[in-house]
Amino acid sequence: MSPTLEHTLTRIRGRDRQVGDRARAHIDTLTKPPGSLGRLETLAIELAEIRSEAFPDVTPPGVLVFAADHGVAAEGVSAFPQEVTAQMVANFVSRGAAINVFARQIDARLEVIDVGVAAELSGDGVVHAKVRLGTGNIVESDAMTRDEAVQAIETGIGAAERMAEAGCRCLIVGEMGIANTTASSAVLAALTGREVSAVIGRGTGIAESRLAHKQAVIERAMEARQANTDDAMDVLCKLGGLEIAAMTGAYLGAAAHRLPVIVDGFIATVAALVTCRLCPAARDAMIFGHRSQEPGHGVALDTLRARPLLDLDLRLGEGTGAALAYPLLVSATRMLADMATFASAGIAGGEAR
Image 1 (cartoon, rainbow, N blue to C red):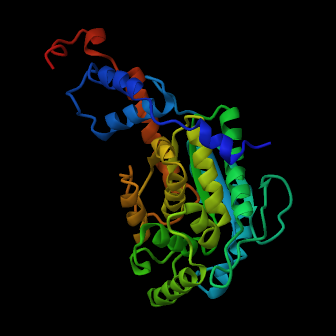
Image 2 (tube, helix red, strand yellow; image 1 turned 90 degrees about the horizontal axis):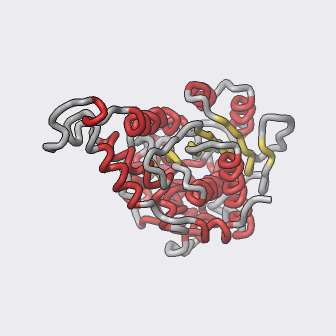
């Protein structure tokens, strides 16, 4: 049985600053000018604090991809039909997607979790944890009930728990769901108070001329739902998605296990924002992998005061940008553990620094 949301929240603590100080002191003894490895040094200290280990290890990584559909797809906000979600899940299972390629490259354990695909999936290779057959169309009804949101969150917690039990020391969380940039934009606008026009983008690649329609759909949904913007759970239930809720749970589960979690692109960062509104201490477990092309991603990153590691003009999702950033975490930990000190190398000058 998955840990409950309430139990998980009680287990989350902030970063271990004392261990971070030890890691920082050790970095200052390494055979290099002070600060010359820049953000890699900061990253190493952050990982030490998250793991509460002066010499942290982030291998092996675990990748969780949550899949769900969105009723708002019926409003014509995506370049692809809704059935593509189920088809892409099949592609994940057959190991043909970009996240499969990158997960193999970093030797990651990969799970694909159906938390709300609007089709009955069968066979091996998918974790069957469907809460419902897609969310409601947020123009016409709430996305989900509070009980359904909690169920999806606890599915994410359980997935993080499985990865921790399997020995994973770092998590990458991704998603798949046609129309999920629409739901994410609505959630982001509600939680930040920003105009919809400032947070929407082309998503899967809709024509520039259709952006106005997407904006109008989101504005209609927000007006109809009247979510309590001071209550992240209410916003999630009324405007969000089942995969967004599950990602929220995965972030919480990672934080409870002191696992660094690499946040991917726009949808993943909106889920991170929901997570931090529910549990501010969970922010301390997050490393932000990349900046995507979605305009709303910059808004979400700024709101979380996050500086991502990469900027490669990505807009795919699936956890791909986070997987590409993962080797930087490995480099940071290897620097900390394997690089010689001035004393061990017999090099003069370290004491004078």
